[in-house]
Amino acid sequence: MGHTGASVSASTRHRTGWHTRVVRTLLTNGRIYSSWTPNASALLVSGGEVAWLGDDASAATMSSDRTVDLDGALVIPAFVDAHFHTTDTGLSLTGLDLGSAGSLAEALRAVERAARSSGGRPLLGAGWDETRWPERRAPTAAELDRASYGGVVYLARTDAHSAVVSSALLAAVPGITGLDGFHPDGRLTKEAHHAARAVARATITAGQRAELQRVALRHAAAHGIAAVHEMAGPEISSAEDLAGLLALVSAGPSEGPYPEVFGYWGELRGAAAAAELGAVGAGGDLFCDGSIGSHTAGMLQPYVDLPANLSTGAGERGYLRYDTAELAEHLIECTEAGLQGGFHAIGDAATDQVVAAMRLAAGRAGSRVAAAGHRIEHAELISDVPALAATGLIASVQPAFDATWGGDSGMYAQRLGAERARRLNPLAELAAAGVPLAFGADSPVTPVDPWGAVRAAVQPSNPAHALSPRAALAAHTLGGWRAARADSDGSGVLAPGAPASYAVFATGPPGGDARDERLSQSGTDERSGVAALPDLAGLLKGRDLPRCLRTVVRGRQVFDSGELP
Image 1: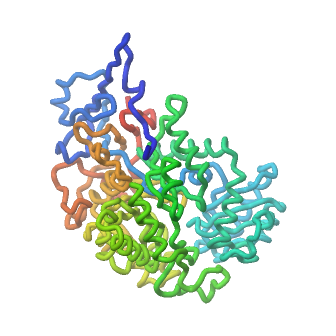
Image 2: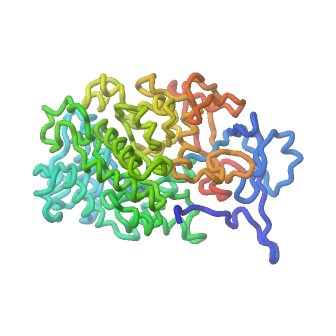
Image 3: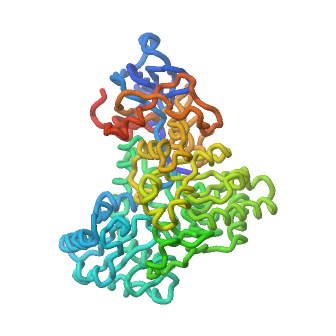
């Protein structure tokens, strides 16, 4: 079984004696985003499928069991988040989130408040970013010891590729002082960070983990998301975490319903383990390098701010974890097993290495490597986009990274210099070269906010990288199904016979496609009369992002705001 998802349930069927009658729901008086039927205002759902699209006049002649007046709301294919961390997202929503801390002092006060109310339990937090603090540095182990009254504390940096930990946690990790990335002040990167994270996460019980996963999936559904790609692995989570998540969403009427989950297991030469877990791929967060913020992304040129930050424990060009030959062997193993492979690669040295590994694997195993749907996660700095496109890789990217850290004065510019930072996240160039794109948040690294990601892709810090709204929406809907090789049933579009996975949004006045000259993901400009998208340009002038009213997955309602009939 490749993934776990929702099927048609009692919410879309009625029992009458020995027979099951499919319920037909008619949505009217809306704006239906579909290239199948231009200017559609009505949609008929029969069971778990879209049965018909058209105008309200024709809808008046349709038979249905239930009619929903959309009152002008926008209906789109539901979003897919192609890079998600479910348990960690639940932790960020319910636990110690330092993303809003405006200073080191404020972060330490938050740790102290959490310690006072924790009853001595370990504190797991995340979200701090020293580049936004006036102190311009991370907390130390000694400071965490004082703030937590000597407790066990693990605080992941906002990018999740480094952390600061308390002395009590350091003492609980066997051999940590000898691991690469260890620093005595409590700042950890590389292998030392992975080891400490594993010990910290082991303090979460199975029951707590399941509840965190429920919280995260409900949160995703409330933002119009029908499916998530779970990026699991032995260094980012655990086999128990992934197995528990897949069991949770397949539990039937006793649970959920929830968005669908596609599991990825990030272990080198881990195809057998991935298959046993029920994952669709042995990849995802299989780390070739680290992150820019933690100075661990593998770069061809040095970081420009390292002279003042040598205590990070990272090399001047970050690092690469594996040999290229090892990556090629992994890709061949995945190809032969019928699984997707893939890697986390952010810096240009890392993305170059993944391209070289794909070429090496194809040279040994032939064209089936390029056709296997292998993925590259993040792909922020790329030295040769056409070369990457030629490999057949799917790019799972995060437009919110640029919105958060881009610009001439943002973190990327601080780490790399403004000129090199402007080359990051070249979405338009990737799309023009034919690289399939799938959007995600990498939550909790950036918040669950699919419309925010669409806006970030349309209005990036470097205008040369901008996508059209339609191309951006395609990458966050159809692109996600394609990236998981799950679009053969029509998922990702609203058309007769396609799964009824859609989201309803309240929006401001509609707007046109501001960048018609940009290519859509399919290579054509889609001005075929489909419903106008929200005025994304107006969103920058104080208008709210579209607000989710209802999310439906294969005919099953997974979120409802209570505002629609």
